[in-house]
Length: 456
Image 1 (cartoon, helix red, strand yellow):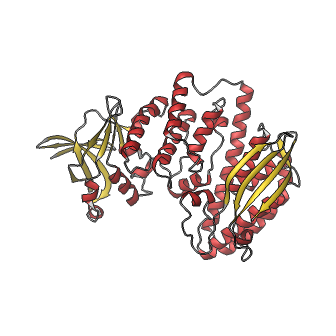
Image 2 (image 1 turned 90 degrees about the horizontal axis):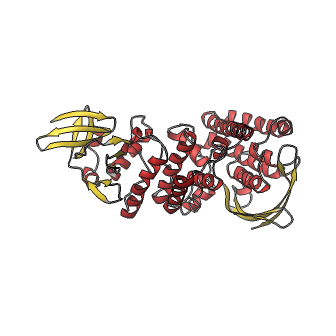
Image 3 (image 1 turned 180 degrees about the horizontal axis):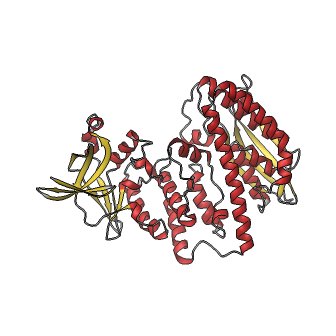
């Protein structure tokens, strides 16, 4: 048998029966020998032609090449790697029929591993065997040579929601030319995704259609019941093709939006850097730095607000409200401060600081992980949590503008017992109804008063 490498994701195997296409798994022979290769062999690949018709690409055998195992199947002439095609509207349009076919056939894929997909010259695609692709990723979750090097997969989602996330990443890249999650890999990327650490799309691509930006954002960081369906994506792509989704803006508007993006990105990076630093430090240092940081943050907040343009600049009151509750969910007290007028909402900020500091201290000496997002925990059907771990965040948020200009917010707030301290209440969540009043400050709208009703 003669084997030639076509590119990073494919081999040309010349056998006695003719040419065959090989998929290099990146898994060495010893590790592969312990796998259930019978089950993996039965996971056929998928060929979706330009019309959406699906046929199979079976694994005929496994061979060894340069110390790694290769899955060998029927030859496909002139196939090209996924990365060989620019990330643009045309690519997304070509991919969508394949995603629909995969959904209809019920194939077990959690989004797109780009090394597991190849473009075919007739406009179709080949997707290598899903079970094999998932298994390769499981064995090499952070290996730079594995499928995980390609970053279109959500760490938790499955099914249609996972594919919506993949389409969201590609749409973001098409509009901005950058990765939505800062080109990070491994656990750092998973953390950024779960935290929803994402700047506003319209600040990176000024003039993008609001509805389109909202759909893409929900695909990337929305709760499972918010994530767009494939039908939603079809509607967006149709609009994108017909009239485009980015309007022209003046140079002043573009400059303002880019400045806002830079400020928001700075806030996100500071928050993530702090969290990552805490995880690597000893618990005594956790306590000292966390308490000092909390005091300094509370003291310096008025000075910072006076000197910096808030991230809420240019937002409507409804957008400020959405940003405020999103910041509570993300434990982002800096953004909360930007939403609030002086002396307003300080109990909320103290709660965030208390839960955050207490969580990090306990991580240091008990080895606990971050509290799960309540929305994720509910989506996963409320799995049992380790002792001492509680869900955190806001769920079931409903915002309504009242006739007098105030905004009513109804939601569930999930906190540890006692709001982060030991002991205290045993209930995990309470229902709240907030009525927000607003004033127009020099630089932005601010929440000037919060009238709150709490129900157990």
